[in-house]
Length: 109
Image (cartoon, rainbow, N blue to C red):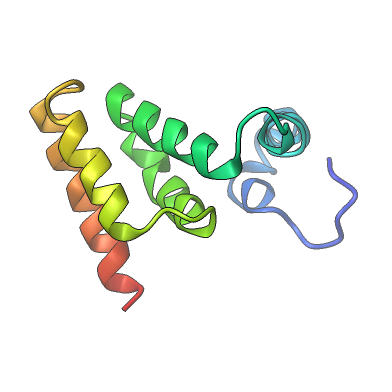
């Protein structure tokens, strides 16, 4: 796994059952792909959030909404992304995503 002394979120969640998946997540996905300079972290977050919503993958949406905010997207922009995707990804996916966002954003206030 990574050399960090503190456990990563992935290590905490699934390191005991899937250490190789955690290593790939931490070292390749977040250590390499997310660090590439060809597109900005903000753009990567926008793409990732959109992809998760389109695929109906709500389990990881909270993490990536937070990451999107860390990467410069506002709550208003993220709500607009969800609204826009309602017409391309489907109404139920957008409704599920907005409920994830509402819960997350209200917990932060």
